[in-house]
Each structure stands twice: as structure tokens, then as C-alpha cells.
Image (cartoon, rainbow, N blue to C red):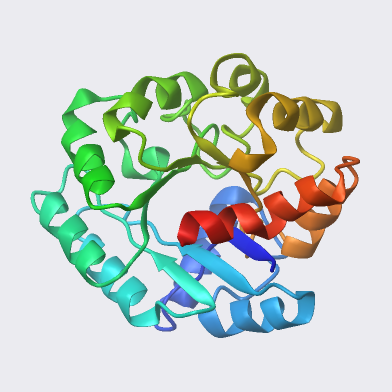
Length: 262
């Protein structure tokens, strides 16, 4: 089974506006899907992807209910929707409980877009409840190419917050920290955290990717693409250039995610 642990899609009524804004900010001119759930499914069929985890983001407190309504309504066997809360929303804890009760398996934070520092103690109660509810917590980690700001979730911050989760699953996207991979290798590799591989094909140095997998352990690496911004086929092809044995490749491309998602 092949599982893409890092994808995005948007409600049909806003998909055009959302894609236009994100493309303008990031400089991406040729996305791999049009940003809709239907086109994500079309891509999955064409490329042999069995399931995709869809990471939704509430960029402000006003959005979170609508974002999670979309996730709850769209959650399915092939599109596994994660919700999101803004950590400073007055009802963030109630929204986490609603997400868990509705059967969502995880929550996504993007500290850059949500304008908070991942290691701010003020947000620790939100993390602690996510862990208590059994949610998988995913962070955008490292730089975001669509924003001109210092990373709000660098690898050192991820390491600092892990004890708050008490061993509950945490995923640091983009191989632990986009464009901060030497720091990931130095301070985060080997810790109790998952890395996904999204948007790293031909960006992370191959030799460092191999060393990262060796040091961190293949059991804690999840395949991800970042669709629509990168293609799952492109990201998978890059992984296969790393010289991984069949068992290791199988863990990364599907079985680790299958185990984590239960």
C-alpha cells in the first residue's frame, strides 16, 4: 500500500481563490492538481496512491470551525482528513474535542501562517489535549517558501516541545525542517518524532537524506508529497534514488503510515 501522508485540497467554493493566493506567494506556477478533492483523487488513481492524508490549516481563529467542517465532511477511506485549530482561539480546546469525536485522526499546525512560535508555553495546553485525545499532531517545520519570515518551528523548537506530548505521535514535516536539514540532523534525528518527506525531492542533498534515514531510523519516516505543490510520483522517484533496500522503502512509502493511522 502506498500512502501519501502530506497533501492539501480546498473546498470547491474557495479552491480558485486559495490556489491563486498560495501560488502568488510561493512562486509555484504549475501545481500538480487544481487543488480540489476531486482532482486529488484523479492524481491518486493515475499514480497508484492508495490513500492520502489531507492536512488542513486554520490560519486564524475565525477559520477553524469552517476548516474542520470541511475536514469532517470530507473524511473518507481514501482521503484521511486532519483538522486544525488556531492555538490562540478561545474555543481551540473545544474544537479539538469536536474533531476527535467526529473521527478525525490528526491536527495540523503551521506556526508561520498561524503566527505563533511552536515552543511558546502558552500553546502547550493545546498540545497536551491533542495528545490526550489520541490525535496525531503534524507541524510545518522549517522555512516556508511562501513567507518572508524566520521559521516559527525550527528543529530545536520541535525537540523542545516533544515532552509536552508525552510520547503521543508528532510529525515534523519536510524531513524535520525545510531548508534546516543540517540542524535537523544535528539536534532532532533520533528523537521520538516522525519526519515526512514532503517537498524535499531534489532539494535536500541526497547524501544527507541517506544519513538522516540511517540516524533517525526508517520506522519514523513517512512518505509525503505536499500535493498540489509537488507530485507524489516525483517525491517517490527521488526516494528510490537513495539506494534504499526494499524493506526500508516499503516502510517509508506505506507501512509506517498504515501503522500510525491504525
